[in-house]
Image 1 (tube, rainbow, N blue to C red):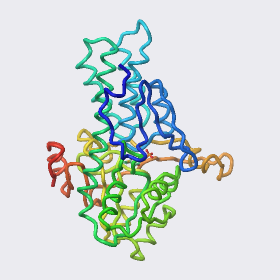
Image 2 (cartoon, helix red, strand yellow; image 1 turned 90 degrees about the horizontal axis):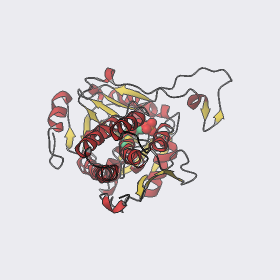
Image 3 (cartoon, protein in one colour; image 1 turned 135 degrees about the horizontal axis):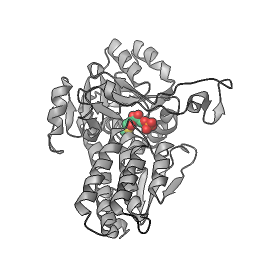
Image 4 (cartoon, protein in one colour; image 1 turned 90 degrees about the vertical axis):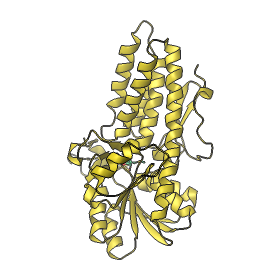
Length: 364
Ligand code: MRU
């Protein structure tokens, strides 16, 4: 096995899909080095993949899920001789699952991987790895297809000449390819509806300034980079028509966890009566999380706040809090754009209905 031809091929038109399986290892575009350098990391063990997820070399909820799926394949390929396959596999799942707590796509992918393993547990390690690789490849291409559907469903919500605010990075880099919120912007741009995009820089790790700007430049979509605190002024001056963001986890009632700074953006959009959209695949909805207050919020190292790209900006000894995500209450969300359709309030009902739908039909 170890043959990429056994995995479902990912469409070649994904100019910067950040995840590639190559023969017997995983290649990840190291997003900590962008936009200055395009460096591909070679992951040959689940530990390599876990490290890449933890340090945000691969990031964005859907991309984390797909990378973890390939991490499970590597887990089997790295099986130490004489070790019990089942015990070893559970350990790999735990190791990968402990990397980032908020993005539910990680847990979703690992649970699917567990089922693939269970369906093949009577086979030898090589065959189990082959089955997992086939599944991981399918997950990979399904995510690209889901993002394209999100774009198709989201585009009609836009009008010609729209100026859009977005936060963090939700493009091809944050997914297996194409993007969620940025995919919607891309689809609306292709339909000639986008005048320009306001890109929040997204402190502390600057995913907007480093990654969204990088992607929009490549698509030729006009944008201006702004500090996160500019949104109030932009909205008050009537300089934006819509806000569209991604999600790391959507609770059963529609409350949505996303990059820190999303919630204040939603409050401001509401204050200025500007539509606020969340774009995410169904895999980001977690029906087992009842409300936003049940979503675990990742806290990262203080150094990410006291430093900017390795340069200290606060006095030595400064204590800092680094909440990586916040929760936007459902009542501030105009619509949730998914791969099965556009969901409107009341989300408790529309989400439940959407989760039961086949992926190719329209939701509502
Ligand atoms: O910490 P990150 O960079 O992984 O955070 C990413 C986000 O918050 C994205 O908006 C979210 O994962 C959706 S990506 C399609």
